[in-house]
Length: 218
Image 1 (cartoon, rainbow, N blue to C red):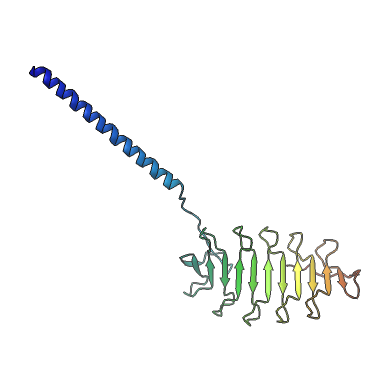
Image 2 (cartoon, rainbow, N blue to C red):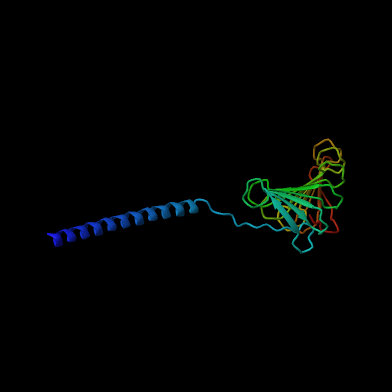
């Protein structure tokens, strides 16, 4: 009887141990699945921005915190620019600049259409604290093709130049010469040779031909 009893005990122990091992493996596998699913649903952004606001060909020093980046272009310890990332995608949505080094921000660049590229530039060219020039990339090709300027500080654009074909030369210039808010003269390049050659005015709506001596770079 004793030999029979010992065999039964050994078989029971082996069966219990095997079951316990199976349960442990199953629990660990489920935990691994949960970890992997959570990791995949939360990707980490690897976008890194660099700036060269003074155009010297060297990367500017920056300090970033909470979506705001201060830019020191000349290494003097003072910020010449500030970039802000509002949506947290790692790409700045607005850039403010002190282009003349007087310690006052006078230029603002922004991404108006949300495509990740700065396309609108607002500037205070006379230092009166008001924007008097707006440059824009209206066709998202990465180049400025429209510049509107308020030359008499009345708060309204009186000169608008446009480059419709993307060659970097002015194709049309619209003028409000009497500050009434209405365009009263348009000068254009009618033959696309890079030279303004036709003026349309209220007095001569059909156009008056002339030939500029140099191409107008936008």
